[in-house]
Length: 180
Image 1 (cartoon, rainbow, N blue to C red):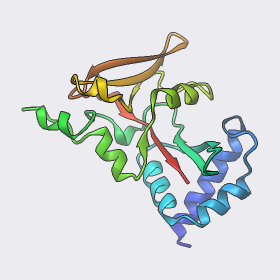
Image 2 (image 1 turned 45 degrees about the vertical axis):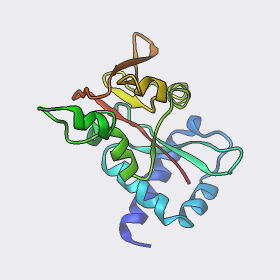
Image 3 (image 1 turned 90 degrees about the vertical axis):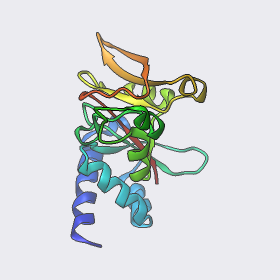
């Protein structure tokens, strides 16, 4: 195991231990065994960490048995902001193009954007995106019409709203979800 992976595992374990409310009935020993057997997941988690995501275990898939990791940084990860929603939206911008798109960057991380339900479940574990917002996986019927959805927490509650998929803001990024 490389030094980088050992440091990442130490960081993940410290975060896991610090936030037991995010993963009741999950032990670090089982998470560590799953990560030791999955180099691709470690690489994805390293990329999530490097872009400011602060990934942590938020549950376990009852069907596959995989652990579910999600960005748990207080705000949308700083290294993944100022992005439009997807490649098609990026290509429609004639000027002032953002540096990329949320869906493409999530794919580069070998992860996915959170669905609306996953975002609401994350918000039940803590208060996230009180100053930022995060793109969410958009239903095809909304995307076909040119829109995309995002979520945030304001005024003590969680909001899911819409914007043009080509829009981008310095305070809007995305949270990644990974199964390992």
